[in-house]
Length: 156
Image (cartoon, rainbow, N blue to C red):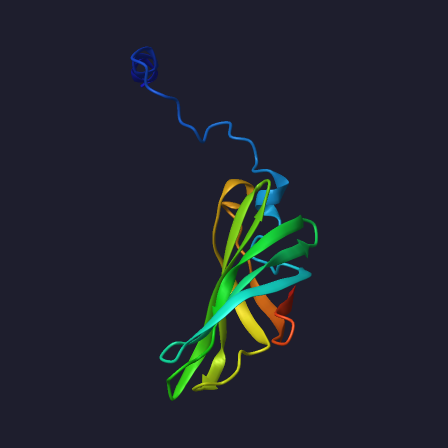
């Protein structure tokens, strides 16, 4: 067996990338399987009503997460719309110099045409850079101010 390893190495085969791999950076391990904690806010950069699928609110702002720092927040949330019962949904992406975190949002079961709920469950569904292995889930509490076009969010 040692001769085969030497022969493969001599032939230009790459060594196993997992051997001697250092532990992932601390940012990869932050909130692994836990809740993100932080708050922020921004503006509803536009909303448009789609009667069949509900009103869509485009979001843009910032959020500060404990132990992780400040992030830009972009995304959307959508109401229930024309359905006997349904769930509001959304997706936000948090971005900083180290990468991105994609969070899917799901509201509670509601009657059709209900206003957006105050709380969504979130699940980290993807990440890039330092957050590629992030596993987090919890509750995102939103407050919308239709008069000013502002929103606030708290992750717990």
